[in-house]
Image (cartoon, rainbow, N blue to C red; front, side, top):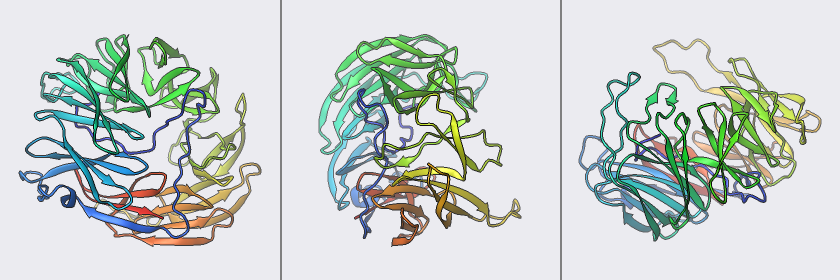
Length: 461
């Protein structure tokens, strides 16, 4: 579990109804002539945040907590005073709305589409010290409330009291509901490998887009990998929480109607493919429908709306693996071919893979490591034939954008035609701006610092 105020990841989350369990498209529409639509400093939205020194009273931490079709929401936490949410028009970067979060609280916010939820805790929840973390300070958790907020307007849609003690956290987030968990303040502790198993039962409650409570359920002690507002994977009326496991390493889901606990014997739910839950047991044993699935990791692909999206895995990576395994589209999902490179995206019927090569293998401890070059390949998944390849930079993002593949690098974003790999467009960016995520209509950029973001930008058509 995490304390209120932890950093929220901004990434497209599954909003799939139970009747259509595969994830939605993970693509962007940049058109044929995208541009840097706007760049803004935090001080333009929050003039009081002028300092760059974290010890200053005018310093603010900031993070994007929601990005929808029309609006961007930034949470700003000042060194003094209440945290606030700032709504920004995605098209122009213009200030839209502002609202303060409850004074004297520490707040964690998570989003799903146009819905935004915040847990406001009166005193920061901290687990008691353990043998694994004997130097951690302990603070009792105070009263907490859940706020449901319209991300487009900042309007409060509803609120709920979560309780006066214990550690309150988001367990899972979907497009129109959240699962909130509560443990006693001494029931869990972080280890070097992440959250340790809980030592007390965990209370779980479901709240809708207006913070109206639904079912409540109790999970026994031993639950691990919980928290951080994980995606909810919905299949056949069951809401599986990504990576949530019980004492026996079984995956955990909840009946959508009444919250009754559903166990996944093969391990924690990690992905969905064509309505089938893929589970992982331990660090690398995959299974689907109770049958062992070859591969150690399911590759999350950026993809368009093609119904032919393949299931792709890679073997356990010991530093030498540079290949992707394509599986049958139907049970028993056997591997049909192995292709070079690690899969990055599936766009226009082509699987895009990347192989990285070090520019300089003689880096010493006193020198900065040089960036890596990479080979981006477009592969026909039916034959394994490489249709085209292009030199790029390793570790960047590859996104589907209409008839193009959008590739982000430091200092630019450019498009390659899916059909032949030809460069179709390019957008120059300030070097300090880094890829942060994307919406349906654009790419988000941030200037990332040690604890906060102070420059934001958006590339759109």
